[in-house]
Image (cartoon, rainbow, N blue to C red; front, side):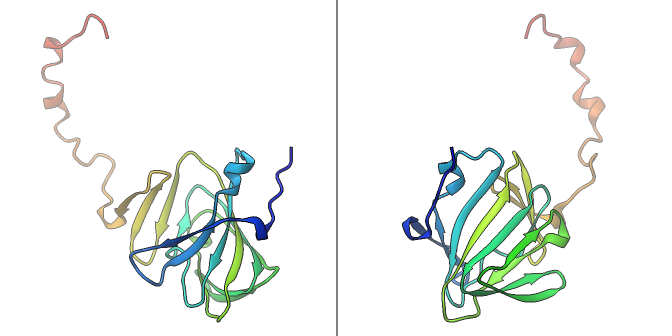
Length: 170
């Protein structure tokens, strides 16, 4: 059964970050209402002088914006591009798909945000060096990246008492 949504009937929630420049209005997750299995989508309003989420890219999700009304400046790895009503922009996985919006106009920009839905996604933030494990929102600094075998050097010690702790049942 198709799900039909009309922009005039949507309810928006204001989201304000601790940093004033990052704020937006987000519709309820339309993908939940539509019972979508593979996509996450909602409509967002970006006020004048505000930025969307911090500059980021996804390692395990693709994203697409459809500008419904207004104009907005898009930041991508190659530079900046003004988007206007009717523009569709696709962001591939990985660093080449990095993006951020800034409303450089006096009017609200309205856009549809569509993302592929994965069990786990890794979102990286090049400006701040953070890594976010989604959907858990566990955020780490990438500079703390370590070798796969870091902290595993004393494996024999950890197994030294296995002969005394063999279980008959689990």
